[in-house]
Length: 333
Image 1: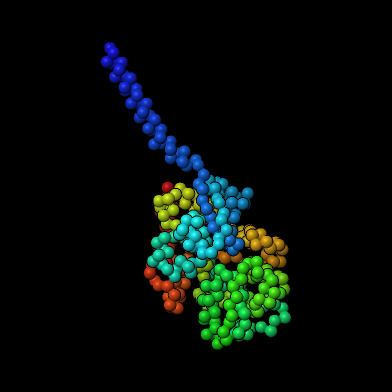
Image 2: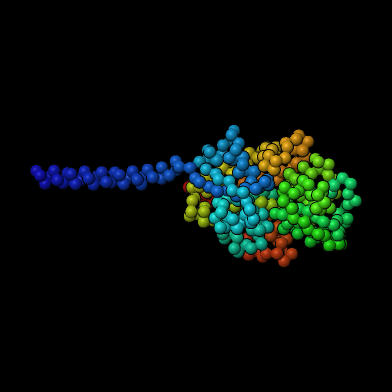
């Protein structure tokens, strides 16, 4: 009798241990799913990071909250691509140019899950001069001081290399500026002409300055330009924190879809982030890029830019354009 009771006690203990183990195996993933994901986003004042702001701050949408993403915004200083590689940010927007020029390295370390594109026929860029300037056409830029936002210098180089040859321009002096210096660049006599993109293009026009040419990026680089790649580290998605990556993709794509349907919202956020008053006429003259989710990214446009850069001796065709992108299966639970 004692042996039977002893065996029953042992069996009960084993059943209890097995039950606890089952609870851990089944319950822990459920518990983990219930916790929010801590994610660091590199942000700036451009259109590129507007989807992050919408996902966090638009109280009618609450995309980050719905996806359980605790977003920490970190102001980008320096190279955002290196920031993602080094783990300063988990998510950021980087110029497609920077990804493409070192494909064998960048395509293996970080990949894009969304994109911003400047479509031909809807230019966001312009050469602008002050009202009383003697510069009235692009040929007059030769020998002058050309101002631009510092982070767009690669863009200016691509345009000016071709334009200078096409128009036989004298040497142009490049003057990189911060966003804070831009509005007073003419008054402070820092530059003679500006090359800028929206929202700064529209704001400078609104304050009385004159456009002498626009759409030169499409003319001298490629017609439709993949401008910003929304990226994460490959390891972050595959091994470090896949659940967080899935949640981020869902939230950012939802915000981008919303912005595509409501471009005025994108204008409002980018103006607010730059401390520019939201005047009706100003917003009307602003243009927005295409916000492209993973399935919508124009691989052909990326290929065209890559081909153009290789023709100019910049970068190589080390990997196919599609290899810069995550695949849908990477975000399967």
